[in-house]
Length: 402
Image (cartoon, rainbow, N blue to C red; front, side, top):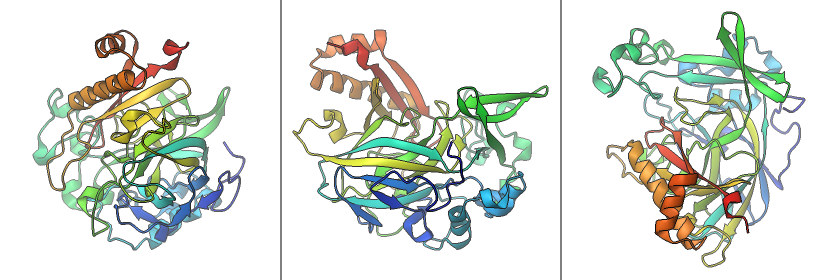
């Protein structure tokens, strides 16, 4: 944790470039299109620091007034971020619709010189600094792993009594977001023996403490064409083949994310800062909290060997210790079409991408690679809450040491 509140322009800024989340440099609830106008231009291989702003505390069901919301949780006025206040009060690029729009504050896009369709943008995660010593974890009606479905039906595998938040508190019929009965858990950050920890009541007077692992839930490049900022294809919630809201908790400092490029300049964007997240993100959100993120953005050309072969058509990640093939249940759904959230589809795609990587990049026989994955690789649920669900594999690099 930094020793100060990272207000805009305050504290360490590690990148060659610095991008604030000003109201005219963000889209609220939507990601940039293939024809979006960039808010920053940089050369391949340079670094950029972005002031990520969390949507929690500024949303309509929380009053759209972060100063008042966080004051009610005991946060001093000087610890509420000025850019969060400015966005909540002054964002006017689109007319907000809480029931339709995504919640995320998305910053960008950034034009990377030399990037062209068919390339890969290599995104190296260099630093993630929490900007404030608190976060929020939210559960909202009709969302999360235990939702009440449209029309009041119950998902397979659970009963009406097992829906969260409880059905009896569902006030969506009022049409007034502050009366929807959504639950937000304010989560202070404290010092622990191994570093900063998130804290919440653990029952019987005890406290639950868990380590922070900051990362950006949204990291992507433009993928969809649109002539309007609020085209459903640009909604910030579902991830796609350009990345976006993939919510993979391994994408912390030291990791690398490879994204296929679909637009000149790649048009990189980021948002949805997390301080900590469990695989699955079952309640709907992670520990959401504003984070200052620094990335290195590098263009990789076909045939250069600078990116995994899979990454030229599908997002792919790696950490210091592992390769991370990714599968999405519905990465390119057409606007207006029903979105497929079947985790089995995401799992199959993650396995196919893992096989393609091991065969094409590591030279393994495909049948042998399939057996290896079954014996020694892990496949984890990335998230089940973003309409398009995700699974990612974890292939340990140490298994392939020479």
